[in-house]
Image (tube, rainbow, N blue to C red; front, side):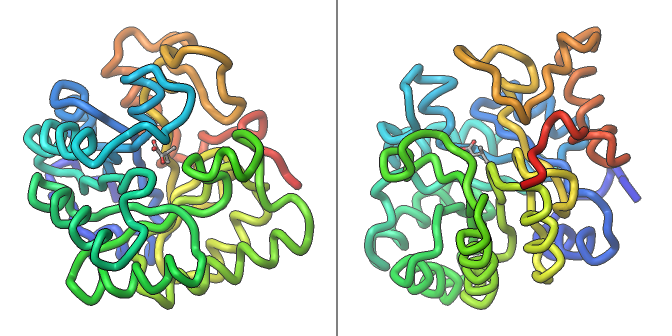
Length: 271
Ligand code: KIV
């Protein structure tokens, strides 16, 4: 049951998953929005490297540096009392165990409670184990991986054929085994996201991945309809849908995720 007075922790997120209570997540990059999200009762606030696109105006997340992430994570965490703050490890900042530990330390020191990294290669799994071994909580990220945009050939749905879907399910199980405590599933068919969620004991957060995840995450600026360029199919612009203020739009999103009204079928792809 949603309790705005409860300060969230990683075990609390795990308990929400176990009790099939939907987890509500959004990105934030500054103190003012972070405070608003926290007051409205968003459970997880991700300082995403999407800031490269929505704050810095780049075409991809690749130009974002560790210094950028530290700056924005410090701003966000200074304003948050209730939510769990997760910070992205940016492109090329976790290529070895030592580099990953140094990057994670700089993010944890400014208030992140968990770091996020993309993918599940053998090398990535070793890095996750090294982080978890040093008590750094890790969030994984599978499916459409923005840091692999050039390899994928664009921001394109993943896991659409049977062998890719099978590989992603295996990757998710290996990430869980390596110690991740939360997993973001982005841009994959709804049925695959449901299968992955059901196969895991840790919570999943979906973005463009259908309603079967343990919770949902959106880029805040997509929800407010202010992201430049083409509107992602999976996003809902709550201001355009009639919310009277930014706070009301965020609150509506939280209510719709908790009640299962968001995402609706027009926000996902079945296969
Ligand atoms: O960087 C980000 O905002 C993300 C979300 C899209 C999940 O990774």
